[in-house]
Length: 262
Image 1: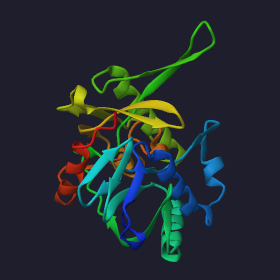
Image 2: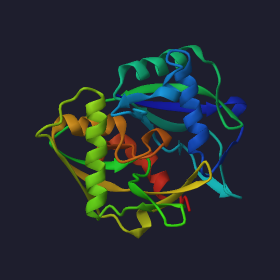
Image 3: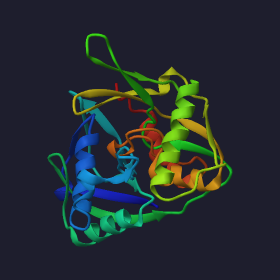
């Protein structure tokens, strides 16, 4: 289930956020869950002794122009952010909180909720999607000196496609969705080096890719991509996608394409 949230700053003050705001934005969503499911922050959803956090969220999309100064994003007026989860318990927790909260905080900024909308899901066996936050896939190895090295994959690599499908099936299994004889393939659509984005999270550089992707496969798995994200680190604000043919997204997404995260 996908929720579209529109916030406006308290007293119409200027919004002043770090360019790499994933962590404080994630903190707001965890805070919204905390009353109903306080254990989810630490426990997540367990599958094969691994903890999955089955939700994702988008970048922030200002409804007016913005500027970047000293690694901070500044603008006036309202903005939109999207949140998604395949778990009804999480969605219910978010709705319960936004109905009772009067003021919401992201870093040192305070907002009121202006509007909430449910996004109608469009699912076919083939679907062109557009990212609302960068998709990341990677592998980590231990070097001979004991240091860890993380390699991030290009959307055109076999490993990228393989890891996206494996990650999605892991989420499906955690939700009790049968994945035998079900598959999903992902192909980049017009992706170039300009679509590669670098973001910092807890001081670590994470590489991801924005733009259009073609999905093909089982409808249930494609539906899960819209509700849980593609690739890794979804709960840190990576991998959220929506159908590319939704007209009501066009204006908001054009802001993203003008903004360099590097």
